[in-house]
Length: 464
Image 1 (cartoon, rainbow, N blue to C red):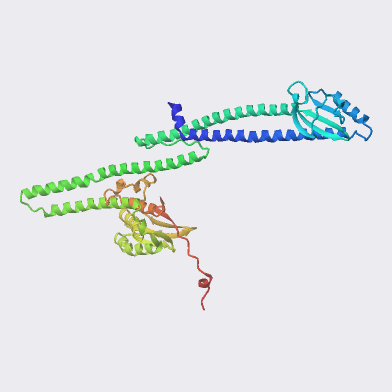
Image 2: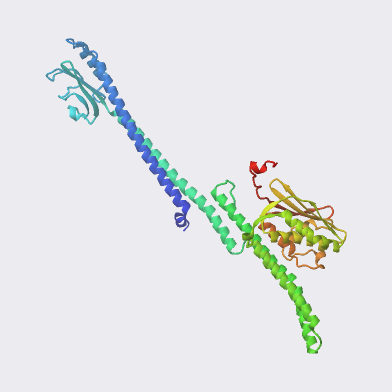
């Protein structure tokens, strides 16, 4: 079953494909090498044959054949007919010297066998027949050395081919098993996630290959999915917990109104109270829906070039009097032009929520400070107060929907203000963080700035 699955797998098919290509390339290149080697050896043999023929012929002098006969007999005496053939014949075909009597063959270069020249055996020769004066000189060399060399090369190639095929098949199967095992881990992880194990992650080998890259991306997506699902679970639990009290209060108010109505008493005050409670619940659900829409990116089509400094000025103008009525102070400590691409209304609501949180949760005498400064290609917006602050272990939790600190549960609010702040910041690719103001709290939001427009030299020149 496992082998059948492996044969159907893409890694195995790729390994087999590349193995076949490797073996075919090896055999093709080996055949070319063998052909070139054989042609080279044949050329060397012919060159040696030609040199031997020229060397023997150099001993000939007109009207003096004794040196030629002696030279040929000397060469023939050192070799048997199985190694080389030498023969000198006169015009009548009579043998004058050499180790064999050659038949009449026209001048030229030939490949012959022992039987072709009247000898026993099955030897092959490369023969050159040439005229020296009135005589015919025959010189031939055996193919034994060439054939032995080619045989050794061929046997070596066969062994190399066998090793190459074995290595290709074995290596291909090993790599296919290894790749398939990693793909199986991916499939098993996704199967675990599909069955609810959102914490499952694909193991990373750390070698930085393409499968690791894909695994890292999938793990990042799974991390995001787990965060979203846990956030939904937390929101559901928070809604069930935090809205249970107002819904019970609404039910008690309506029951009291029904009881008073049964006694024919005035229920208008109870109905007004029930309506207010219903409005607060509707406001909470509307805020939850708005946060969900922001997180889904539904407002990105309204993005345009916006100066955060203008938004800051509006917030300061609106909330300065509100802060004074609460016995607090609101001021802008630092300002600068900061162009970002975003939704002006959402940015205004985000800063307003931060200022309202400071006003609502800080005592009289608190100083609330707004600041906006540039750092490289970023803008840093900060809302600071001198109030009681938020404990460090609670600072990340306050961005959750409907989460409220114990000390703030006696004040009005749904616990959605900072959730909306986080959603707007994420929508604008901004980073949000809380820190100590010594005393109090500082909320910093870092925005990526738009590139500054380049002014032309003419526009930059001073005018008269």
